[in-house]
Length: 404
Image (cartoon, rainbow, N blue to C red; front, side, top):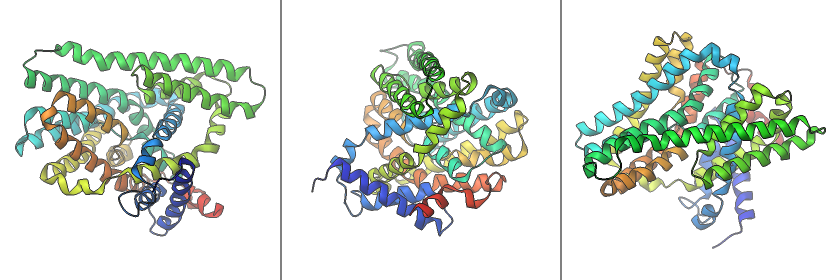
């Protein structure tokens, strides 16, 4: 039965809110409640919303990720980056390399073809910024782990694409014997995308700051900011740039240069909750739980070694970067969630190694399913153990419960 987009969105919002309230009784993050509620109303279980309708709601993902990217960029103040610069580079780089190396090596050892193992290693570097931000917002987390986490997640998008590009180029040479593009050309493609995304983000950040300074009414800041976010995401997609990275740069530019930065981000906070609820409920509704039965040992190895690679890499990076002991101990456990960027890299991987395309897709989507459900739980627990989750009465779920 077909239903309208408006009805589908209403179901997702109400189911997500109810799920958050119920999951609170188990002391789990609201994000997990949103996702489970979406799973229940989606095609995988009760089928209240058909897959065709869910596909038509895809623009919601672009909108929400654009806002989340802006929020992440808003946490990247120069004074924080200067303080954590060495730590961020060590942790950000080594958690990526740890996941890529451990996944690739482990998959080769169980018999997967080298090109396929390298591509999955590259995909393993990707981390989902949306779940991370949602958990931090709900927990009202503040402290060195939170600061470092937001910076690492912001860096992850750019560095992950570069690492994937390098491993994809090596795989392409193995598969095709270097008959097509050179390794240099394949590496330069993601680097060019990143540079252009940053430049475009700086331009849009300048435009937003310029308009904001000349806007007298604070009420007008929200539609102006959203307009810039949507425009930036849309143009980035049109020209095959990174919409997430571009909007992160917009947020970072504003927080470091605009005298109205606090008013801009305060306006954005007012719309975060409904966006988060709809976004994660939609993600849950799109999960295909039957994938779990198709991945076998390779899928299990991918999931476990990716998690261990990030934990070990972040721990080693924290040691080398002389990070706060809490960062060294707990940051890696907050990097489990994986979603949209990983799926995008999977599509690229299928083009490089078509004969293994279905297997790669099944492995990655199964990992996305698991990490979307339990990743926020690990992130919340790590922040709690680090002592950065403040008074429970200020939590996001408490707000939801009171509003219901």
